[in-house]
Every structure is written in structure tokens, then in C-alpha cells.
Image (tube, rainbow, N blue to C red):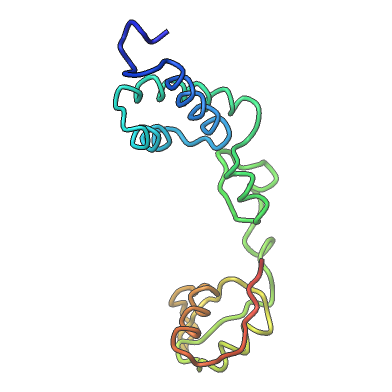
Length: 164
């Protein structure tokens, strides 16, 4: 098939194996350009890039007709929040208070490490608003950042609950 264009330097079977494996991976994972570049680098054959990219794009298109990608499924299983292209009609009327957990656990800007540690052991929230003493929002700090700060500074040796 690709003989007239001179797309391989050795055996045609090797060409089909590489393009086929790239297409299978692209159809399953929806990786496209980076997959073609990785396989081109692995085979060290620049002539394979165009036919491989064509195979990858076709496999990606066909794969998206039948199911979602491996990575999207993994994110759903891990309950990672993802944005979608279209907002459902019922969700357009939601407000933050309709979906948030309450009571809100906040940290003041001058909280002690001990207090932050105790709060994180008591709840499984993933983010905490940080406010001034006057109640003005300064920002949000994630549970992972707090755990890393506590563990790296060596304040406590006890385990902190990691939701998951």
C-alpha cells in the first residue's frame, strides 16, 4: 500500500505492525499526535510518521464513535470533576449552595498548624477557604497542599485522612 511512496526502509510487515499498534492505542486512549511522535522516536524512522498519523487519526475518530476514552473512564471512576461541552438544563438553575457541603469549614489567616491538623483529621473536605479576621476571603487552600506542608515540615507524625 505505501510502497509507491517509499514509507519504509525494511519489511512492509514492520510498517503494518507499528501503524496497527499506534492505531489500537489511539482508538483506546484517544492520544493522537503525541502517540505518533513517541512511536516515531521509538522506531527511529521519520518516514513512518505520516502513515502512522493517518492511522492514529482514523482510529481516534472511529473509537470516539463507539465509546469514551480510557482516561475519561479513569477520571469518572476516581470521581474527578470534569467540565462538559454542554450544561444540562436542570443544572443551569443550580446555585453553589445547592451542591456545596455544609457547614463550611474555613481557616483564618492566622490558624495554628495544630488546628489545621485537627480539622483535617475530623473531616474529609478537599478544600478550605482562608479568610481574614474581618471575614474577607483571601483564597482557598487544598487538602493536599496542607498535608504536604505539614508532612514536609515534620510538624506531626500521625496519618491524615486522604479521601479517595
